[in-house]
Structures are given as structure tokens and as C-alpha cells.
Length: 347
Image 1 (tube, one colour):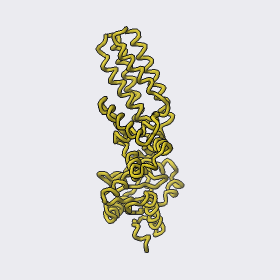
Image 2 (cartoon, one colour):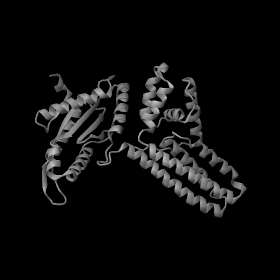
Image 3 (spheres, helix red, strand yellow):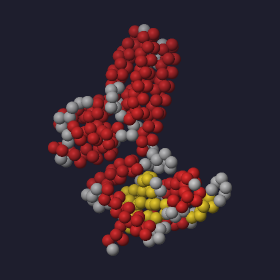
């Protein structure tokens, strides 16, 4: 559910190219693959976190430099995809070479198609991210399918090659998902949580609406691991993640923050509403007894402690996280299995 779909038409791609080059000219940014990818993502609007960051720079254009552009690429596009993306880039080059061989065998009536594919091969420069490669893959698929009427022999070969490219596109989807998902619980990971929170904070600042953050921590989780072992501990984490996910709805966003900690982002929600959500969640866990599937043994109640904080327009998201964490710490000191809002920090 976190995957960006690329469905741009040739006309859309051309318009994005024009807009990206216009911005790069305004800021005297060299047209290289990294810089172009950043601005292409921005003008297309598909990378909301990147767009929010650049929009802030546009208010102070003198601060936007080539160094800033490279950092935006690293932070919002390239991070977490490196090795897999490079392997896919090499695989696409191999597939293109195979298609070109088919075309040489088939004769000259499809020479234009060969020239198009050679252009795509030239575009596979270093430092492309998964989405940029995905864009090239989509164009290869369109060109390949358009040539399937050029002859029966070539058609069979192209259909087989198209299946290879389709499989590669699925691999790209998997890379994107793995970069944003916690492998144990299936929730969003901490990196993606930070992106979402930054985006929601920017939106709240612009609209004036409330935004709240809940931090939750499993009580005495070390005791579970020490008593029943890490396999049972992992199962408790999975079940907890599922129960938290079931407790929210709509735009509410859940992620694993780390260890036995979870976070819930509540957009357009006042702090009292967020406290109600946390209270219901606490009661849900308190009334549930978890049982081992292998032995049928009950492992007792698994309770959670909660900290709730409200975003203050203009502050950094780190400050919001810190207040929620401090409120959670108060809940732990109060004996666990309770909810504390940031209001308690003032007393």
C-alpha cells in the first residue's frame, strides 16, 4: 500500500521534462541523472515527502544548492534501494540486448523499434532509483507490445521477453515495499513513519488542523522473552501489531518504531480524541489474553503503556516525538498499563 505507481503517458512525461528543466535552470542546477530525478519526482507530484521539502526551499530559493539537491536524492529517493536497483539495471540492459538480437534476426522493418530500445539502454545510467528504472521498464513494455504484430516468429520472442520485463517490474515493486515495511510485523517501518509524520505535520501547519501522535510500548516485554523465548516474543509483537492496526481506521497511520514500541499518527484529531483512541486500545489489550498455538498455554495479559502528544504548528517533528516519548515514560513510571497525555508534563 506504500508503492508509487508510474502510469505517465508520453505527453505527461514530456510535460514533466519541460517543468523539471525549467526549475533546474532557475536554480542553476546541472542536468545530471540525480538532479533530474529529484526535479522529475517534484513536478510529477508523486513523491509527497520530497515535494514538501522542496516547497519549503522555494520560499527561500537562495538556500537551494546542488549539494541540497544531492541530499534530497539520497534521503527521499535512493536510500534503501542501492544494491537491488543496480542488479535490476544490469538485468534490464541484458533484456534489451536480447530484444535487439531478436530484431536483427527479424529484419529491417522494425529498425525504428531497435533505435528506441537503444535510446532506453543509454538512459540506464548510474544513480537511477527504482522509480526511474520502473519508468523505463514501462516504456519498454509499451514499445514491445506495439511490435507484437510485426511477424509471428518475432511475436513469440517478444512475448517471452515481455514476460521477463513484467517479472522485473514486480521485483521493483518488492524493493519499494521492503524499503518501507517492517519485516516482522508487516507494519510501516521507522523510516517510512518519519516521512509520513513530516508530511502530515506540513499539511497540518498549512491547514491549521490538529495532528496527534501516540507512542505505545509493550509492558514487561523482556519478561515475555525471558520466560517463553524469542519465538513467542516475536509472535507477541506480530499479534500486538495486528491488534493496534485493527484499533484505528481511515487515515490513521501505524508503524513499528523499534523493539516493542509502536507509533500511531492521527491526522485531524484533537488531543482529547487521541486520548480516547489510546484509552480504547489500552482496554482492548487489557481484556485480551494471548495463548500459544503450539501448547495452548496462556501467557497472561499483555498490556501496553501510552504517551500522547499534539503537534504544535511550526515545531519540528522531533519535538513532537520527544513529547510523546516523555508522556510514555510517565505512564511507565505510574505503574504501566495507562495513558498519559503531554498535559501531564506541565505539572
